[in-house]
Length: 327
Ligand code: UDP
Image (cartoon, rainbow, N blue to C red; front, side, top):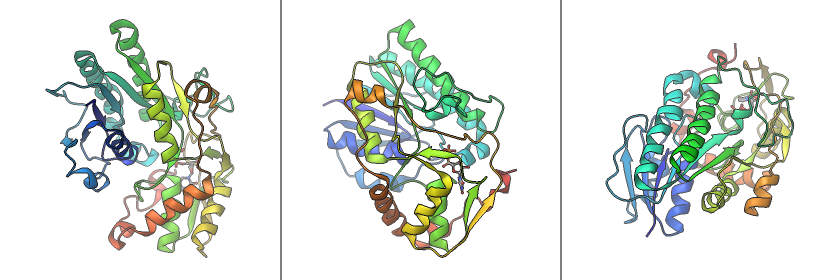
């Protein structure tokens, strides 16, 4: 039986990866320090003999006694508002955490896949974004703690690959959505749905003409699984190229939820990327992968998930207002 270590396992993507690897017949070691993750995302796996959970911060030294075949590093705050609240942890998990895990991969002879991001492209001047674009990142802006940690993460991963011969994979993940996103993490989809469910106005930042391209979580997990098992060590974009403006996206959510609330406009956050769309030619050619779930279907499933949350979860507001973020 192959053994896989998944960090950030109690988070949105990490928990879906745990499900996938259990389904594929792996032994899964799930690691998380629960700083933004939630055990409820993996509690359905807790009775499974092929699953164990370790509460640990990967920025600290990691000890695993048994053998490992694969490591997937998905631990990190992932919402711009979270980076502002916990900037040092965000920097550490992408840098020190990655270093620790690469050391572990080297010691175990394991293959390691890191969760990189479209944020390495910053506010991109090339559109759509291809993997050979170097990006346009402000290192000292509010997003710098995440963007630069992820860029460092790619650099150290390639260094371990070339210098130590560690087998590595790099996925650049574009905006992804689906069940188990944190309703109050401040990201646009849970923000809009949460506002609709609570009967609040929907907050569009700027004029809403900035774009994003949203990928349903099942599609993303399939792409990551294929990349891990491929023999390609350079970065690969995984995302859905179906691009939409934030204002149109807000209107889609308004229609889906049937809310009568108004759309209100707030200042655009500093360094908010104006456009984002993955070029997925590489993923198509190398992995035979393409997204299959269209936004209408994915949003319906996600809305059902959020509707099923308790009143307490729905009203737990982590970011009381966005003024701390939108200056
Ligand atoms: N956004 C918005 N209203 C919100 C939250 C976010 O208009 O209540 C915008 C945000 O300014 C950005 C886009 O939605 O342009 C996506 O933001 P998100 O935080 O989801 O992630 P990003 O893609 O910026 O990392």
